[in-house]
Image 1: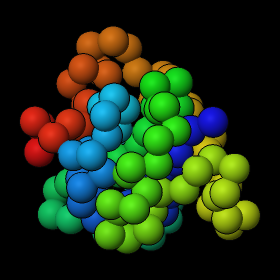
Image 2: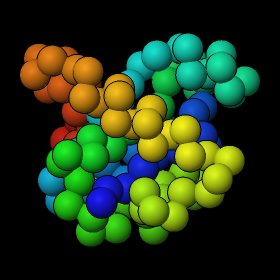
Image 3: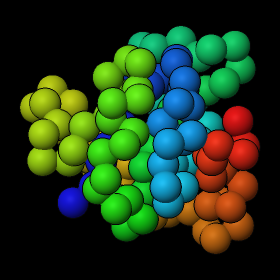
Length: 111
């Protein structure tokens, strides 16, 4: 089980979640295609959204309560209309090389 970042993170990317994550499993996925696909403008040039690597998440839930836009759900509790984000989080984070993971990792030190 893991937590999933969903639609309302697009255009927001508040990063409060990164600051409380004890295992630094958040990644800043800077892909404009998600802003375009879901019709959400970027904050300036900050395209894309934060995503959780499900293989790294320890399911502690600390991030869920910190998110000011309620974008984070436990994977088993993602609303039906947002279910595609379960696959999006998995596919995007799993497709990154070790170098890309290091470069895009969002931590309290990287904000």
